[in-house]
Amino acid sequence: MSNMERGGGIASTVKATRQMNFLKLRSAAEGFLKKMSAMGVTTVEGKSGYGLDRETELLQLKIMRSLNNDEHKRVDIVSTFLGAHAVPQEYVGRTDDYVDFIVREVMPAVVQNRLAEFCDVFCEQGVFSI
Image (cartoon, rainbow, N blue to C red):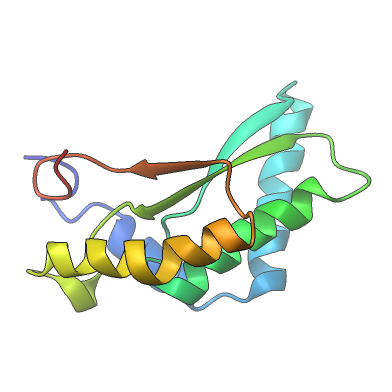
């Protein structure tokens, strides 16, 4: 049984992430980056995928860009759009519809605003297939 099939932590993380605003999410990310910097990390891959809706996916990527543009930054963030990280509650049983939503509604905004350098899909049994 996979993490996703067991319920994983993603559902609760998505709920919490959707409830946070730009400043709260950015502040949390800054804290993680400070800890990483203290350990000698200079570059990280930042992935969205914890909103699973248009607004929150774009918000996560905008925060990564904001952190990258900070004049005092110590860690570079390589942004990846992971809108297909899990199937959100509102699309359970309709995975194809969710993929269509990501491709038609979210990805064009990511591209237009140059919010990510890469795009990723979480392929695991019970989530997304190749």
